[in-house]
Amino acid sequence: MEATPTTGIYGLMAEFDTPTQITEAAEKAYAAGYRKMDAYTPFPVEEVCHAMQMPKSKMSLIVLTGGILGGIGGFLLQVWTACVYYPLNIGGRPNFSWPSFIPITFECTVLLGALSAVLGMIFLNDLPLPYHPVFNNPRFNRASQDKFFLCIEADDPKFNAADTRKFLESLHPVEVAEIEK
View (cartoon, rainbow, N blue to C red):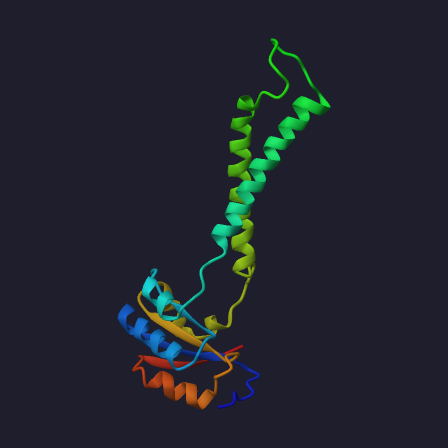
C-alpha cells in the first residue's frame, strides 16, 4: 500500500478516555505497521512506550560522557596548574598532591554532567519548538487534564488518509481528527 501525498496534513489524531485504551491502540497501531506516531497523556504511562517500542533514550550516555569529561578536565586542569604552570612548595607537600584535587574534580564532574543533561535535553527534544501542529486540534488542550491522544503522522510510510482514518476508527476512540500543518 503506497502512501498518499499529503501536503497540508500533519497526521490523524485519535482521542481516548483511559490509559488502557491508548495502550491497546498503540499496540495495534504498531502491529499494523505504523512507526511514526506519538502518544500524548496527562501523566506518564510506561506501557504506551513499550507498546510503541520506543528506543532507549540517549540521555544517560550524554550525561555520563559529560560527567567523565568534566572530571578528567577538572583533574587535568589542577595538575597542569599545580605541577607545570605555577608550582608552589607550600609546607613541604609535593606539587602533585592528588587528594587535594578530589573536591574540584567532583564538582567539575557534577557541573559538566548537569550542563550536558540540559543541553542534551534541549537537543534531543528539538527545542526550542514554539509551535507544534497538534495544537491545531481544539480538543488537544485536554491532553494535560484527562484525555489520551494517539497521533499517526503523515510522514509514516504506511500512512494513507482514508485507510488510516478507518484503522483509527476501528479502535473505538472518542473522536478521530485531522491535524493540519
